[in-house]
Image (cartoon, rainbow, N blue to C red):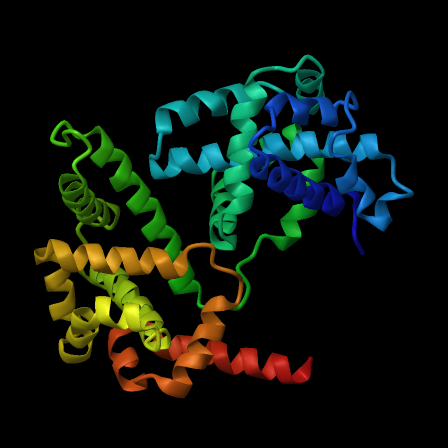
Length: 339
């Protein structure tokens, strides 16, 4: 059954799409609409038949609270992964000092702080399902449920959906960790005094250096865990390049890389990643390209396609969780046939 909270969440996403697609939109238009001072975005509400019997102002108030609770999740996660942590901690301190009533009051007086939290909320909603799961998992690990419920009492309705499900969990966690470490590397590269005049070559080299360092620091130098992480990265891009080998431009651009992956052992590939800037840049570019905006079950669907046309033996050599993934596939096929 669709709840008021579900509708509020859906309308918030529609509202963000319309707002960001309109070059002439002013952020105050959003505040005025949610306050009931403007009917600019009424067409969004009118497109849902289920809203005809629901008080629109109630939905708008729930949207206000969702914006702030999602912003809290994002900033809490930023602090955990040390990404813009100084600003994020400042925002956390502020968010932990207010409650749902004060949030609604902030909209009523058009508080300038709202825009920052709206943008954080947008980051949450437009990110992958893995990122959203990690934000919630982090909040639970930090025991911040009470803070979230103080900001948004309706958030309790989301608790039952906070689960990655029966998927390729190791790869999913690897993808999010890659994203976190890469973003941190970019942040540090931008701030590095060696970067002069936004030189792209220097910037790319700095990102690779900081990324390698971030991986080592994250695993505290544990060689086994570091190699497992890189193995998942290589297996992921091997799978994706194989599936897209019919695209001439891709095949030509990454011909050397795919040849190396076919020929070398995983330990040699990891060594090459550590030694060659160009190979590291190619690996990172491919990984980002194929794992950006990942949808749920997309990894499983890719694997099913790969098994029909790819080198299964090679993938099994590269992917340390290949057999575990196969067990997931068996359950997936069984559930699909039963549904």
